Image: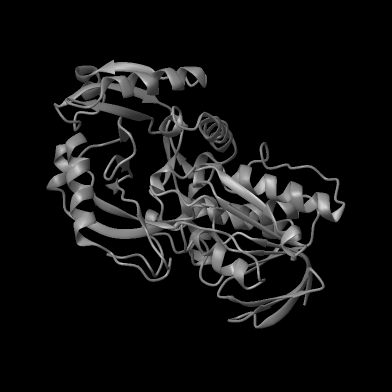
Length: 405
């Protein structure tokens, strides 16, 4: 079979690329080895970042988060819960770090507000008595499952073809160009394409290797523990350098506690440490004591798609920005890899990728995704029906056959 662009990977970035290209009139096919969202996307904690988390360490990435946060509120409100968020300074936490965070947020034009501990507990009664002050920021909670299917539906309605249960088995490169991709599973076909986009997240290194090129990755695992909600209705972040158990994310009947960061060799096969689960709950309980005794609903693990050409010793030091790699100089013209980033910035990653691919193809149409509402943008029930239709696997939303109980 033939297509102009083949997108490999059915997470938020992959379906975002397929949607963006299809809206520009490009013939695009997407293949995903499992259900949609079955990788990092469906196993995130589901925060729509304001950028405050990265403001002092990576202001460019923080600015991108803030811009995309505002866009997604406009184009996908049915995917977003307007919870707000707080960065909490506990007794003993470094007050200078809090001030650096506050100044960095102000420099971004975020409009963050400082509350004392009593003011914070008036808003979030479940917050710890040890909270001395808090920074209010425009974090929110996003549904990965709804977001992915909304993008997939818009891509399909614009002419894209989407195949799940379709693993890539090999990539043929001849005379310095990608020629075709062998896809197994339900599709079982040889796909010839003018361009191939590798949007496989933590599997990007493995996928690129099929074409004989290198993408240095440093995937890290992180645990999320969903417990019954003891009355938290805002995202709570510990205001300290990134560490285990520093975020509490509310959902209607539960809160998701996260997370850890441990390098893994294989994103399909890694240890799931009980000690990490216990540490995550314990650390999150410092911000919200009631979670320590709340019944566990489920525990799930995600793997971050960190791009690490310099391979630093500390995986937490790796930028959460994204990288777009054109493999023409590697002897695989027509192959592109988009990696890194986060759920909040998926649309921006997709736009950058589609821009590069369209430039190569001579397509002059521009991106439409920043102001085009997603299907079901005002109809969450429709999106939930589509989640069932597509068979999404997203433990973050408690849906899918792979959701642990």
